[in-house]
Image (cartoon, rainbow, N blue to C red; front, side):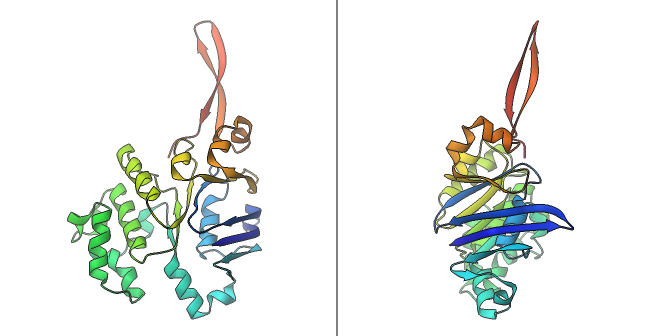
Length: 257
């Protein structure tokens, strides 16, 4: 489904990604890990064709995603229908007057059948059936995240890109989201720096290091069990603890959102 070769990007000379390569097959659930600033969001924006990389090449469904290709209407329309990105901040995605219209917006743009029915269905799937006539800005942070996800799923994408989707969610909503994502048929790439969630979000990990290169590509369990790799990725730290007259070090994972 995706092939990335030597991908690199920078912002005004400040590196964001360096020489990243990988392949993702249809149906895979992939966790994109890395500390803050490692390039996770930039990677997802490139894979959603919102950012053009400074170096390297990448393909979706066998088609190289160049600016020229995306200027072709049939390519751009298919790509926008099949690839969906959930932003970390849901407020950046919401602009319709009601929940129902927010979910139905995508199906209407792509001339899909029964946009109102799709809105009702996905509102029900995401626990928003009783909020259809309300304004999106009146929802809680977790409900806004669910609304954005419903709006994306209403167009039936093949590839779902999620940028820190548990950010701002309470524990109950986080557990619900993990279960929901596991049941989806779509290929999913989800970014996080929450190590405790990583094994529940996917079986394969792509880990970006502090040098913005690909530090690890393999089973999630293998990565979270490797203390040296975790330290190299700046996803665990050690500091001293004192207990009475004794002093020793503890390792801690970076599991905040």
